[in-house]
Length: 460
Image 1 (spheres, rainbow, N blue to C red):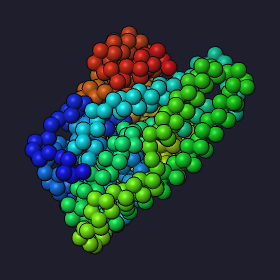
Image 2: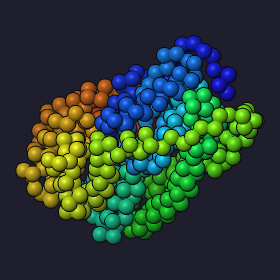
Image 3: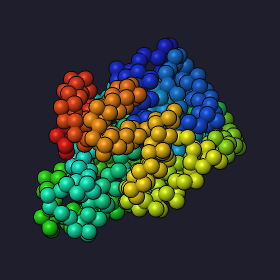
């Protein structure tokens, strides 16, 4: 595989949107964590792998994203996004090198130019758009504007559906087909071996981790789907939930999960396939390289790494509690995260969650102070702007909502996902004309987000 790469200057992907816009897209959809010790270390490994490819001027860097799932993907701009959950699970530098080599291979092989990715993204956008209908129904229940009041059991069912959608929102990365995954595995193995890493402990160790995760996720998807169906039944039996939403969600879930199942080999099958390739390509004649574990262990233990990923794990749990309206429990988890001793005290997410928790308890003054702190944070999250728009809506200040929306769009460089987010922000807070204006711009400028933008503008 490595011999198929032509030495020379890397040719930019047709799907690249620009490095800063690409990073801001990840800030919107996942949230990027500032962990200098890790990113400096990981990018040194990435440079070694790029050098091994003999392709010059390959773009991109490694960034850590705020996600507890095993989530990693590369973008058309060459950036490699690795989740905090993935970092927590990796056991050696060799495993990290295998993961980075695999994602780098997608970039080198220009897989982002494939139509398969566009198709999968459209399918995923269908699921997200359908999920918006559930969010809107939940907002009407919480705000008391629904024309048909829900019973406590129905409201609980709706919240469970909302939570399932939100928990899965952050893990929708590019879904590669079998051929592309096989190519990336093979080239990735070539790159890591040439860069001096252990095949047995690195590539096979990483794929074993993927296989374990795949098995866990298959079980979780089955459990989530069962919960969703039970929630649907509770609402449908009372005749208070639009049948179209049920059909849309069922279709989207089955279609997307079916597509992924059909196009992806599980981690254990990929282990078998890469072992076969190793024997055929190398005839087992590669240097025996010792496992490199200590450098990664040291980086994971560094104060600016461990404290951040541990703190965000607590923040994720608190976010779930806020979504479940368990505000007292959320406050108990969040308060230590913003103390003077906390490394993430000034970060946007924990402060935004504290705002929502205090707002939920009706403590306006305390809530406002944390919203200000969230705005002042250098690591912006879109949720801060959503919270601010709601804050000004409560005060009847439409012009301030407009300013918040414009600030959010500019802060995130007009990245693709900013369009449906901005439309939803305006519409939720009563700026229907402004939402329609952004929808029209999205239709012309962001074809891949068209369905999401139209759905957001329609309040679905």
